[in-house]
Amino acid sequence: MAISISVQALGLIVLATVLLQTIAVAVSFMYFNKVLSSMQESFSRSSVSCLVNAKLDLEFEDPPTEDKKSDPCWQVTKQLHYHIEKKIADRFQREISTAMRNKLTGALPVLHPGVRGVPLPKVAAHVTGVASSPTSPADESLLSGRGYFGERIRAWEGQRGLSFLQNMELRGGDLLVPKAGLYYIYAQTYFRLPSIGDTDGEAKEEEGAELMQYIYKKMSSYTGPILLMKSSRSVCWLRGQEPGLFSLHQAGTAFLQPADRLFITVSNASAMEMDGRASYFGAFLVG
Image (cartoon, rainbow, N blue to C red):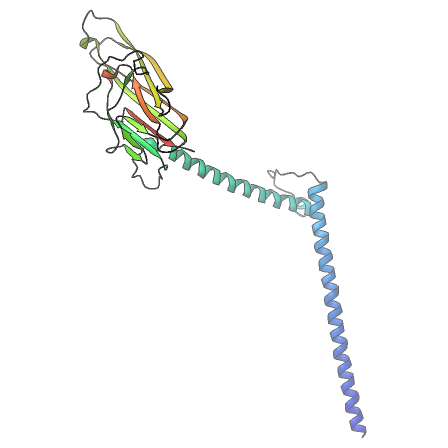
């Protein structure tokens, strides 16, 4: 009987010990959890106070002292500075990449459409001069009866060499616009003017000429062509056997409608050098 009572007492003692240990562990866990939460809250408040009440010094040129390294506000400011720099660097890299890509796209008029990695605009054309084509006679140097200045250039190549047509049509030397939008339009014409030795009459010390280039659009809803751009150049070259070589280039944007036609006229068309790399004309949709 006494042995049975001793076993029961021992069991109660063991049970009480386990229960006390469990309570102690639970209390300790709750206490440390509360202390940890208090530390996190205190650190957060100190971090916010660094940003709200302190003046942020984002310059870290001088090596920090040991006291400065141990300062929580300095550490928070340094981390903020690091993240700001990283965000700015990432954004700058994206903008530079976009700018370079747009710059490359802007060079499309002088690139062959087969260049890998360079997407063509949805609507674009680059037509080039045809070297074997005869030039027009110089009978339209002033405003012609058709409503435009200069001599109209019709000998453009749209399929071979450096030329291409992307959803645009070349018809009779005119580029046909397929859809409404803002277009970038450009043209260059190259002239080989005669030398003194090729000119009849009395020799002169210098030869001179006035070169003109016009870009017109023709609308189906309007009778006469509309002048979009013009470029001029007064040139002179010394007396000698070599001809005078000159070029005119111009470019700009214009809003065009479907069925509009673009064409080029020049002065001195008989002196034009119709080489595809010297004389060309084109447009592409930009928006």
